[in-house]
Length: 397
Image (cartoon, rainbow, N blue to C red; front, side):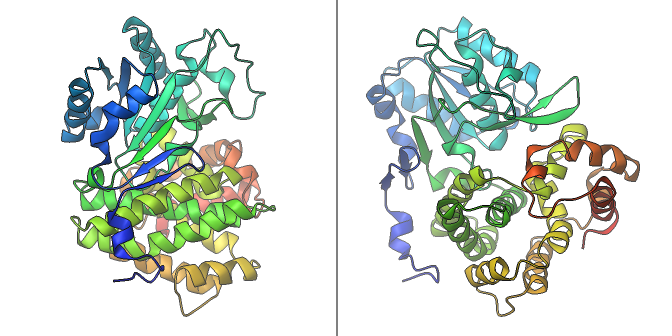
């Protein structure tokens, strides 16, 4: 049987090994290989990093059992919030050093990925985390202070954080989110095992899935010539549009889970090109109100689409084609997204998830300082961003 994206269903159920952009082991059951993979990489004592909400879940016990069966030591650091904080990263660095670890395995959703990568950035040096802020020149890392080996294992299909070193972290003192990274830190292996996402509740499947769709749309609409990212963004959009509704309706459907995990990964690579105003707003809302990132993106998305898409006819047509829509217009795409959000029972306003109207001015100021605002396809004034936020709070759709 062939899906409308052109893949045979057997392709989504069979193991695959890809080397672009980093080594990727894809397929149901690939977590079981983690012990041998660590040995191949010369890893003897990894620190497993996850978020607080995941520390009691079966995949974590399975991971550590596979490591133990390979006669590998491991430690666990699970003090990562849904929106990772700089003080938590500092505690993780302490755990890495105290345990004599030589690698980080980040497993879980986007918060676990971001926490694990941030710990890697600081584990073997004495630099402050914010020396790695994305807008600053990358620190020089000497050969005597190499980054630890990093393995990423996503258990949600949304963040796409498994192939790069970029991480979003909350600066506690400033109550703002910033991106940290270093070009020399790359995952040594990403394990994409759709079986790990099967237990995800329908709500989280929906929220993280719309996060992946938002990555694809925003990456594709970022100005500039980057055909590699554009191609990945369109393919990601096609996969998410096809498989997300089915993954929510049929949570045990392994092909749907696989299609979503691949779509999420491709979208994560694509947004190396940049993101847009959905993320600029969502980052700062999350930093202040600790909202779930994918859910926040989902609520804000139609508001920003109505602002961004008019005048982008060619890109709109190609996105509509990827989504298999009959109406290849800005209105057609926005309407299709709204229908999907309604079907997935996404809240219609930010106020429903605890965001008050009186924060709009403050969040607008912060959003304009986010790197994603700089790559939004339509530059916005403070008044325009405040209006977008107010609309999202009162009636996003």
